[in-house]
Image (cartoon, rainbow, N blue to C red; front, top):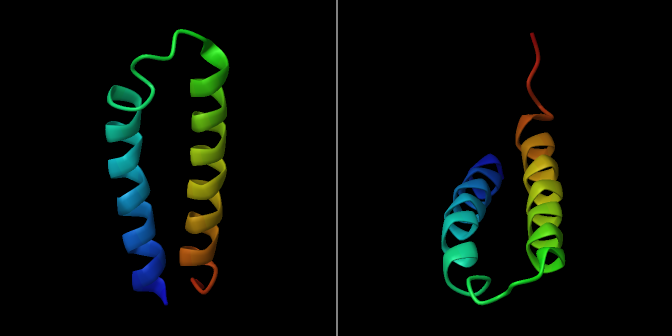
Length: 57
């Protein structure tokens, strides 16, 4: 299951580079990119929590 979250994090990072320069490149308003980065940040935070929740000292 940890591999799934790891792959999801890598996939989202790749999308974070691709989407702003393709889909959002013609968008002249800041709301679209703000929404994209907000959702991306929340998904990355959730994926990091899920990937590291079983870590112990």
